[in-house]
Length: 196
Image (cartoon, rainbow, N blue to C red):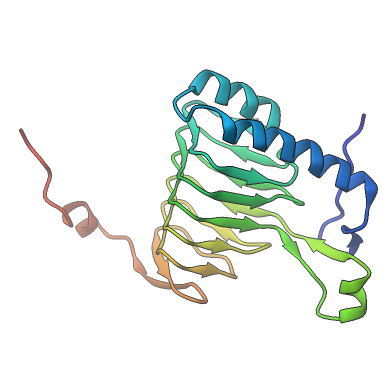
């Protein structure tokens, strides 16, 4: 059966739509099974993830619990790590590059609802893709909103609400999230290196 297509950047009937609701129920069943596994059962986890996600690189870890809406709109690169309680509402594409770290309690949401109450009550919504580059670290409790791109090598501070795109090679933090500074050569020496 062909998966339903979500139109981008325009209102569509997202709620009260039996076709989308059926896909979401199917996805929630897979997420539930994933979250019931022994957290150390990597083989069973990878089997569910490879069926659930739209694309997956090598050395991928989603620490349970993990929830998403469709699954097939999510792609992750190599050496992806998500800590506990990741939520992705993936009505549109959500792509993560290589070497992405996501701290606990983060949310990535592609959905927006109309400001107009009649449109909202009718179940209309908008879906905008999210793109996360390579070597990105997302701090604990961060929310990334619809349509955002986060550039390569950037760090998003804990508790941020990322409502607009963030360039590469920066530290950004806050509500709303703003660039604090560039990442520099001095950052290599921020902490002493442990030696036995």
